[in-house]
Amino acid sequence: MVDKERIVQELTFKAVRSSGAGGQHVNKVASKVELTFDPATSASLTEDEKTRIYKKLENRLTKEGIMIMHCEDGRSQHKNKELVVKRFLAMLERALKVPKKRKKTKPSKAAVEKRLKAKRKSAQKKVSRRKPDTE
Image (cartoon, rainbow, N blue to C red; front, side, top):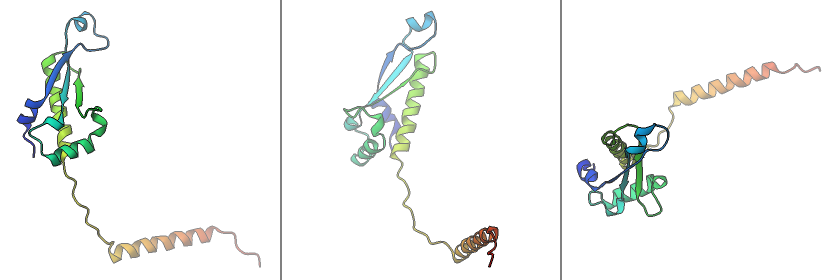
Protein backbone atom coordinates (compact mmCIF):
# COMPACT_ATOMS: atom_id res chain seq x y z
CA MET A 1 0.00 0.00 0.00
CA VAL A 2 1.34 3.47 0.87
CA ASP A 3 4.36 4.19 3.06
CA LYS A 4 2.77 6.16 5.92
CA GLU A 5 6.03 7.56 7.31
CA ARG A 6 6.99 9.04 3.92
CA ILE A 7 3.52 10.56 3.51
CA VAL A 8 3.65 12.13 7.00
CA GLN A 9 7.02 13.72 6.14
CA GLU A 10 5.43 15.38 3.10
CA LEU A 11 2.72 17.05 5.20
CA THR A 12 2.98 20.66 6.29
CA PHE A 13 1.47 21.89 9.54
CA LYS A 14 0.43 25.30 10.74
CA ALA A 15 -0.73 26.22 14.25
CA VAL A 16 -3.61 28.70 14.43
CA ARG A 17 -5.74 30.10 17.23
CA SER A 18 -8.92 28.12 17.81
CA SER A 19 -12.29 29.74 17.31
CA GLY A 20 -15.25 29.79 19.63
CA ALA A 21 -15.66 30.13 23.37
CA GLY A 22 -12.90 29.14 25.76
CA GLY A 23 -12.11 32.07 28.00
CA GLN A 24 -8.74 33.76 28.40
CA HIS A 25 -6.68 30.67 27.55
CA VAL A 26 -7.96 30.44 23.96
CA ASN A 27 -6.83 33.99 23.21
CA LYS A 28 -3.20 33.21 24.11
CA VAL A 29 -2.62 29.75 22.64
CA ALA A 30 -2.50 28.52 19.03
CA SER A 31 -3.85 25.01 19.60
CA LYS A 32 -5.69 24.48 16.31
CA VAL A 33 -3.60 22.57 13.78
CA GLU A 34 -3.98 22.95 10.01
CA LEU A 35 -2.59 20.18 7.80
CA THR A 36 -1.88 20.69 4.10
CA PHE A 37 -0.97 18.01 1.57
CA ASP A 38 -0.26 18.39 -2.13
CA PRO A 39 -0.78 15.04 -3.90
CA ALA A 40 0.73 16.35 -7.14
CA THR A 41 4.18 16.87 -5.59
CA SER A 42 4.08 13.71 -3.47
CA ALA A 43 7.00 11.38 -4.18
CA SER A 44 5.52 8.45 -2.25
CA LEU A 45 2.38 8.15 -4.40
CA THR A 46 2.20 6.56 -7.83
CA GLU A 47 0.40 8.27 -10.71
CA ASP A 48 -2.44 5.74 -10.34
CA GLU A 49 -2.84 6.60 -6.66
CA LYS A 50 -2.76 10.32 -7.40
CA THR A 51 -5.56 10.06 -9.96
CA ARG A 52 -7.59 7.93 -7.52
CA ILE A 53 -7.12 10.60 -4.82
CA TYR A 54 -8.18 13.40 -7.19
CA LYS A 55 -11.25 11.40 -8.19
CA LYS A 56 -12.35 10.21 -4.74
CA LEU A 57 -11.44 13.30 -2.70
CA GLU A 58 -12.26 16.04 -5.21
CA ASN A 59 -14.63 17.76 -2.75
CA ARG A 60 -11.82 17.89 -0.12
CA LEU A 61 -9.29 19.55 -2.45
CA THR A 62 -8.87 23.24 -3.20
CA LYS A 63 -8.89 24.63 -6.74
CA GLU A 64 -5.11 24.22 -6.78
CA GLY A 65 -5.47 20.52 -5.86
CA ILE A 66 -4.22 20.85 -2.27
CA MET A 67 -5.89 19.04 0.60
CA ILE A 68 -6.43 21.04 3.79
CA MET A 69 -7.60 19.49 7.05
CA HIS A 70 -7.75 21.00 10.52
CA CYS A 71 -8.38 19.87 14.07
CA GLU A 72 -9.28 21.89 17.13
CA ASP A 73 -10.79 19.12 19.29
CA GLY A 74 -8.11 18.96 21.95
CA ARG A 75 -6.66 21.68 24.17
CA SER A 76 -3.07 20.98 23.18
CA GLN A 77 -1.40 21.52 19.83
CA HIS A 78 0.35 18.13 20.00
CA LYS A 79 -2.91 16.23 20.55
CA ASN A 80 -4.59 18.08 17.67
CA LYS A 81 -1.63 17.35 15.38
CA GLU A 82 -1.82 13.66 16.28
CA LEU A 83 -5.58 13.59 15.65
CA VAL A 84 -5.43 15.37 12.29
CA VAL A 85 -2.63 13.07 11.04
CA LYS A 86 -4.64 10.00 12.10
CA ARG A 87 -7.76 11.30 10.32
CA PHE A 88 -5.76 12.18 7.21
CA LEU A 89 -4.16 8.73 6.98
CA ALA A 90 -7.55 7.03 7.47
CA MET A 91 -9.10 9.18 4.72
CA LEU A 92 -6.17 8.49 2.39
CA GLU A 93 -6.45 4.74 3.01
CA ARG A 94 -10.19 4.77 2.23
CA ALA A 95 -9.58 6.77 -0.97
CA LEU A 96 -6.84 4.45 -2.19
CA LYS A 97 -8.74 1.24 -1.50
CA VAL A 98 -9.53 -0.48 -4.79
CA PRO A 99 -13.12 -1.77 -4.84
CA LYS A 100 -13.67 -5.43 -5.71
CA LYS A 101 -15.03 -6.24 -9.14
CA ARG A 102 -18.66 -7.34 -9.04
CA LYS A 103 -19.29 -10.87 -10.24
CA LYS A 104 -22.56 -11.23 -12.10
CA THR A 105 -24.73 -13.96 -10.64
CA LYS A 106 -28.09 -15.48 -11.50
CA PRO A 107 -30.76 -16.17 -8.91
CA SER A 108 -31.22 -19.88 -8.22
CA LYS A 109 -34.26 -21.72 -9.59
CA ALA A 110 -35.55 -22.17 -6.03
CA ALA A 111 -35.31 -18.40 -5.40
CA VAL A 112 -37.15 -17.60 -8.65
CA GLU A 113 -39.88 -20.13 -7.82
CA LYS A 114 -40.23 -18.74 -4.29
CA ARG A 115 -40.61 -15.18 -5.63
CA LEU A 116 -43.24 -16.22 -8.19
CA LYS A 117 -45.13 -18.20 -5.55
CA ALA A 118 -45.19 -15.15 -3.27
CA LYS A 119 -46.44 -12.99 -6.16
CA ARG A 120 -49.26 -15.46 -6.90
CA LYS A 121 -50.26 -15.57 -3.24
CA SER A 122 -50.31 -11.75 -3.06
CA ALA A 123 -52.37 -11.49 -6.25
CA GLN A 124 -54.85 -14.08 -4.93
CA LYS A 125 -55.22 -12.12 -1.71
CA LYS A 126 -56.09 -8.97 -3.66
CA VAL A 127 -58.59 -10.83 -5.86
CA SER A 128 -60.38 -12.14 -2.77
CA ARG A 129 -60.84 -8.57 -1.49
CA ARG A 130 -62.89 -7.52 -4.53
CA LYS A 131 -66.65 -7.20 -4.37
CA PRO A 132 -68.45 -10.15 -5.93
CA ASP A 133 -70.09 -9.73 -9.36
CA THR A 134 -73.91 -9.24 -9.26
CA GLU A 135 -74.86 -11.21 -12.36
